[in-house]
Amino acid sequence: MMKKYKVKICGTTSVQDALMAVDAKADYLGVLVNVSISERSLNIEQAKAVVESSKIPALTLLYNMSVEDISYIVDVIKPYGVHLLGQTTIETIHELMKRLTCQIWLTVYLPVKGQAEVDIDKVKEEMKGYEQAGADVIVIDTVSLTNTGTPGRYGGTGKAADWDIAKELFNTVQIPVFLAGGINPDNVREALIKVDPYGVDLASGVEATKCKRDPVKVKKLMEAVRKTEESTVIISHSPEETKNIGKEIGEKSFAGTLIALCGDLGAGKTAFVQGLAEGLDVKSFVTSPTFVIINQYKGRLPLYHIDTYRLRSSEDMYELGYEEFFYGDGITAIEWAQKVEELLPEEYLRIELMYISESERQIVLIPYGQKYAELIEKL
Image 1 (cartoon, rainbow, N blue to C red):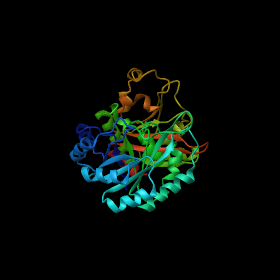
Image 2 (image 1 turned 90 degrees about the horizontal axis):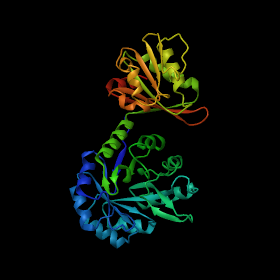
Image 3 (image 1 turned 60 degrees about the vertical axis):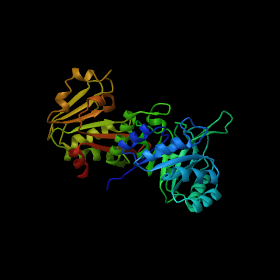
Image 4 (image 1 turned 180 degrees about the vertical axis):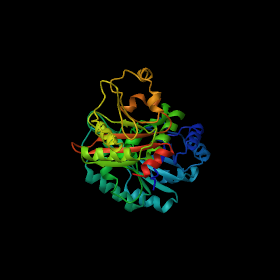
């Protein structure tokens, strides 16, 4: 069954930006209210107008407020829920549970990656405490540190925490946990695949300028999230396993199959193509065509193995007559496909290979088009 990730677009400063999130089919909207440390904060009247304009659940974000102030804002704005930032005590949650009927979201903070060590047990204890007190959702966000090592800004940093540590925290509680901090259209796929959160929460990652949302970035973000939902993640424990995955795809490939391989040096792209060739009954030994750009092999279907690593730009592909391979009747496998992404057709199979350890690789299969989705289903 396809996994559905939730998306909360936060820091909404206008009705126009709220409608943009609604049109993009985001799942939640966030509006900061009377948060002095944030440039995205609105007053109560402005926030009320934004919340009332939204056709998706809207939350008010409140920073270190008293129970009385929180209750008053909720009574006036009537949001779907309150998202409490800063340091929230268990006693505050208990009191709010008595007064509020809306959802209560809490944030726990990790330092920006590389800034400080993380006391994982302490964070887990904090998360469990929030869950037991009645929180509906927990968001893991980042806190930036000052030059003296003391906490600076809580949330809204635009910087990511260590996602490996975040992943370790996500099974701490049974309630939904969102990932925030430094997420944008270019890295959201990596965040979802690496951490596998219930959803993502972001603001600056989809802004054109400070406080002004970018419709292109919003659309790109949502497309990346929805495309990740269709992906299949496989862990290969050896080059031989990577070859076997390629072989199985080769056996099920059809005339005109286009495979875009993305990954750094040593990620296993060539090993995958060697397996692909075996699945196509290619008898020749397959090597990376780094210096010749294209190798062609005879098999059940012709295999065109393209390596764009040394291309200066995607314009060089025109000189190679790439249309013959991209739209032909053979099987085309492109290494370093991210360098010529703008030339890829609407339908293709994207395969992202990522280094985990000396022997392990993460292989993500992302189908673009129904026929590639059906190919993956057959694996």
